[in-house]
Length: 486
Ligand SMILES: [Zn+2]
Image (cartoon, rainbow, N blue to C red; front, side, top):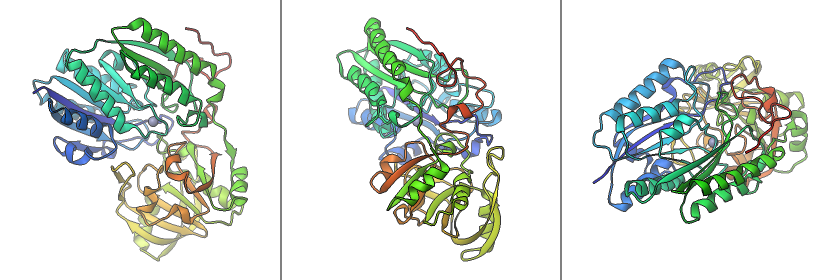
């Protein structure tokens, strides 16, 4: 039976976040434990394993899965250790007939700009000419090295991302077709000098969804294998940061090129739509004051989902400054505050500065009185079935503000990060999520209003506010007069 090697490496970097993502932040699952941890989740691995097992013709060879919450760049020693362990695990396996590699695609090391390209190159060196299919996030930063060392790369089609499982299914079907010798993939790839933000990216309702549906039509057409638009994580400031169009067709490069050009034109011609509309903090608070029911504040600038530090206190300061009277729920990463809460215990009180521990250039601590509501070990579950790892966690109250204070960054996207700590978002007047758009499927049913708040942060949708140094220039919308022609 053909042996299919499975591996997974996922982290999304904001190079503007000064707090690094060390080895210890990765949740590492090895060998057959991967089946126990991933099957029955909504992940790419689960989708791929289901297809390969259901076909009955393949032997899945799980090696290592290493996933971290998004964050700053991975320090060189930590990345060397991580990639070294992953590659060593892969080299323990012999007689591999195909590989299915799950990647995020927007990871950056402090010295390696393209860890995923390096990984695929090393896997290719080891396994030789057997088929390699990789999956990537919609926000992946595609590099020549990644494309060269994989037979097919399969990107997500949804934003917010709800098709991880389906992406694994698409990848496994393409891998099987390659193994059976049924297809000869030809790739068309177009690099677009644009970075995109804003609500028009929502694939169900926004303009960007039309580009994705063009990709899906290609995949459904005879000979269409895989198509996608990878918009890059705008906060991973590396030389290859840009938007990419990819179209794989079976033995038909010319058609793939025509289709990729159509999608590229569509993206470029609509570029002015793909900017974020942000609301000032004072206007956001006024909107929340005038709305009956829950207002969700999207703090995309401190989006731990995009790689920010998670220690912003900007919205807390605004709530205090503008005298908002409603009940507010917010999360902050601040290990010293958690430690103090543990020392005084549940129902204890203390006063201490909070915020700005990790990104002190952007956030200055604000001193607040706290009451300790509850303490937790920080182990919880996300909506996709995967575990969260917040470190010791405290729920604190300061006047009308309730704070979920974690020791390390976690995704504050769905409701479960709050509910698993005894907090019901529906009970509040304002809930802060640290996510630009991914929160929407989890909050649209309970929110009376959703506001994208314009505050500082290392993942601000106000891209001109960020200190880009490495990405190619000119780049829309960072520069005026950016030109693109096919
Ligand atoms: Zn993404």
